[in-house]
Length: 205
Ligand code: CU
Ligand code: ZN
Image 1: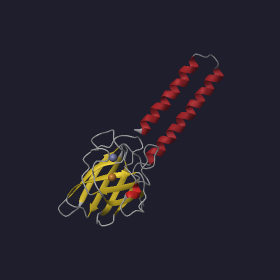
Image 2: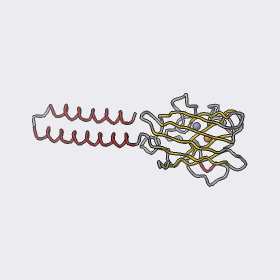
Image 3: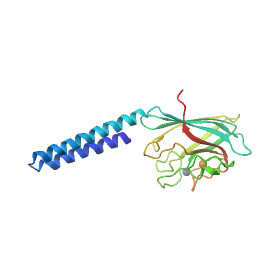
Image 4: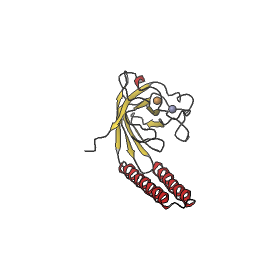
């Protein structure tokens, strides 16, 4: 999405330069403008290469129980070509649905999970479930625990990046809640924070 936008922007810039120069007969100015446009395109190509190199990059949040709870596991974030694949493998839940969110801070110093602050919401949207495009960047919806308290959850999101310019999530927090996220305001009525983790770079080894 970002790559396509950058390319369109650079192309528009090139056309702008070319059209702008046609009205002038000064060859030197035209050549200079073309040179600048070429350099801009080269930079855009380099940027695209860099973005492409990030595909496959993985971040991980190791989830640990908050005080009085036993919910733990891992949440991975893998950069794909069209978004980030989120995979959560969690144990120690009560059976049923539980909210999972990216919260603003990766600060786990409080044992009630509240050091992570509120939902990650850099764009100032209202809270919502992932079926709604305009939502907090951190609104990941709900995972469902079986009778043994285990949950596996996958979702692909295109509203954040690992560490790009658009809503970067590295270093922020992940919270799993005691209750279901019902999509209500301001934060889905999801109750206590039963597990917390910080999103960090995964060791590729
Ligand atoms: Cu939350
Ligand atoms: Zn939210």
